[in-house]
Image (cartoon, helix red, strand yellow):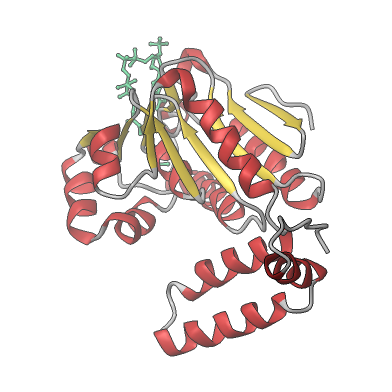
Length: 260
Ligand code: CAA
């Protein structure tokens, strides 16, 4: 697929998807969502891609939300299609069997916060701003914001942000556990790449099992979740990387993982 609204670059096993509609602060219209879905599918299927970073072009915005000019005149049926496309695309990111990092370089409002929450790790620039301002537009978040935000920061703060249309800066986002790290704008991508590299060098099947156990265990009752973990953990013993990891530890050397 040819991309008009995103940049898609793969280097040394690390893919970077850059939202690239700077004039609209990288707002997501359906065309951009479709491109994101396509690029995410490539990342999922291509075994040479070990980790994925999402960021925004320009220095002002990660993603300023779903495209309001496209949404303005939607009928409920078309709104359903648009929100469903967003939900499916973000779920694809969340279920990606390899790690994903959002490098949030500015405004991450509405769909922008929602995209970042579908990633495994969030690094924010000091200039980043988060929020779910949909209420001010007469709607509620439609790409999982009412579900992922309370899971990440707790019900009380999520309600403050969603019901109040409150926007928060990077430092508060860090304090409430919405982001993993706050970084100066100049080092954001460098740090995101560094962490992506670290993750890309981990044994891939083990990474996949860790994500699987966390993602699918989270909403289960503890007994069932622990059973899921048991299966995922014991599956790791089928890999050469597990043998190598333990052998290397006992031989007091660095492991040489081969991805099998
Ligand atoms: N959709 C469409 N266009 C957008 C946009 C959006 N979400 N956000 C910004 N833009 C456009 C503006 O219309 C403007 O375009 P023009 O130059 O053609 O007028 C351009 O980007 C620059 O924006 P501003 O002039 O508004 O820039 P600012 O610095 O004054 O303000 C801002 C920045 C605070 C981010 C402001 O643009 C803003 O509030 N944007 C909307 C944020 C929002 O409400 N997002 C939620 C969308 S709904 C949603 O996402 C639903 C969902 O769950 C999926």
